Image (cartoon, rainbow, N blue to C red; front, side, top):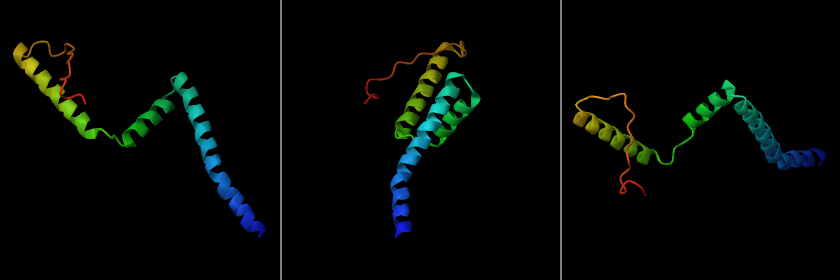
Length: 96
């Protein structure tokens, strides 16, 4: 009976321990980020790589249309100013 109560106690305590651990880890990463340490940036890149993007299709479509606009403008310029920054205004039909 005593083992069963101990098991239930730790089972009820487990989510709070995980939450506290994640909070502690986040505080450490924020301190590293303020000091511009590489570990915080590397962790952020790692999380960004493996976290799902809910708007993948929309992002891909946006990149494709931007590339088309850049190629069109470069063709109009005759290939000049390839290094010049290009600001593309989004079409109102693309924004939802």
